[in-house]
Length: 118
Image 1 (tube, one colour):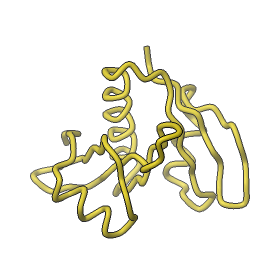
Image 2 (tube, one colour):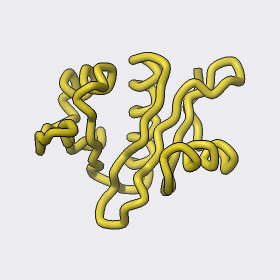
Image 3 (tube, helix red, strand yellow):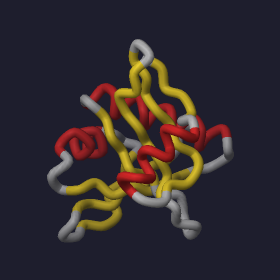
């Protein structure tokens, strides 16, 4: 499996589903097939990761690591994401990682601040 920057046609597909998505976006590819996607919300006030689509917890972890590497290379120290209460895969990752800090709980889910690895 590799994690790489998404190509424009892959971003277009996700935008048709989720609406506007900003740069950067990463995809997980396994044997030439895209099996996961992590975009950036089109909000200029902060870096909000999402949407996240993946086929299993390992793919989710690889996507987050790849996204984190991009943020580190860009000099970003942290980014945010919201995990829906029903998203058991992502909730498990966020709660188990020391890099995710829970910052707000609401009816939709939990907001996390992710500290970029040094």
